[in-house]
Length: 277
Image (cartoon, rainbow, N blue to C red; front, side, top):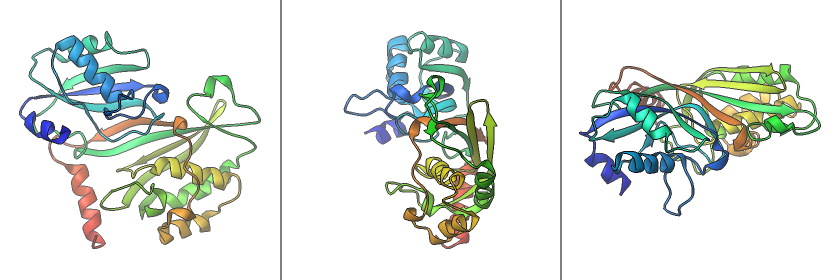
């Protein structure tokens, strides 16, 4: 039903919303039939209340329950002529304190919020130490004990580059190819937390959370660089570390090439053809 509606409204005016949210109160992005609260559902409801128009919000990627976003792109197609600033202010008046529109912009008619994306940056936060600190309880993973950051960095180095990340996706992942390119994985201490900054061309379902769980395993000296190589070559989910909790993950930003050029989609297709998949 939603796909049919998406095709029907393609000729309408596209507006890109950049949104920020605390994911603790949401069950992911896409509106669900069972009435659970979602980011897309709240945006669609706010649009209906403010502008009296039924729309479908589409994000750059699906989001697990509990995951946060500093800057997520959301595409809406509309018949309205309200200027982008009016869209931003109007929606924010009807949204809760845990979800706000940071900005809005008009885009070319052939823009695709997913296929035009050429990269994403995620930040996963770990809070080491004997007790969970109150200020970080909603947006970090409390890891008891010491983490060896040098061991984590050595493991992270083996993951950077173009690899088959089949061992780092959930069993529910339906991606056509598991080839992805990670441009960087930084491990840094920022105040009370350790931040894992992961940037790549695209990501599989739960990929960053599994990467985080694996790097924590390295920090606890359970995995070494050779184990990371075995995970990549083995392509078996059971070889990698645990799936880290959702609340530690934040989508930090999404990057775009030329609007309408489908650079992100084309890159993944070229990777798949290169290995005959």
